Length: 208
Image 1: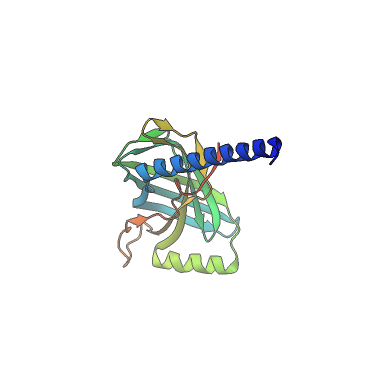
Image 2 (image 1 turned 45 degrees about the vertical axis):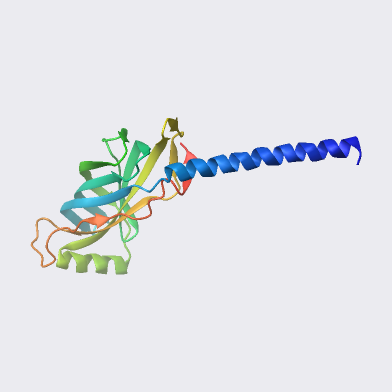
């Protein structure tokens, strides 16, 4: 084997060993911390207005939420730089609110409750015939199916190491059944709802 070929083979071995050591270090680091996704739960929802005007296609709404965030990790802390609440009805977005409670840090084994997250105002939305029929049915029942998504911007602390801020690619999804507070219904009050699609650790998207 020529000296040039031996040099190339040696360089490849060095590169291979560096990559292998890096991957093993990353695996060991991950196994030590074993991060679990935080839990987002809507513990209360108060809806005092949810009216749709067919004359100008305007939805008038007044919704207040209490959202609990639980960090179950022993060695991992989470910095929340920004949380946006996006409200949808029948897959139509009608509100986007940036929570004033951010930024904040959530330590190990910690629970934080965001009180009175207000989603109120009016918005022009385009409902199809089926959407209006569903809206009328839910109005008669006094309970509305409202999807609230939470878009977060976070950084994570593993011991003394901190990541940069990033935005997970998917929004946290809270599928709510919210009774109109001004109307007595057989459905009773709001039922605590656990949110899904929480991918803060498993699916980071981009720095932002």
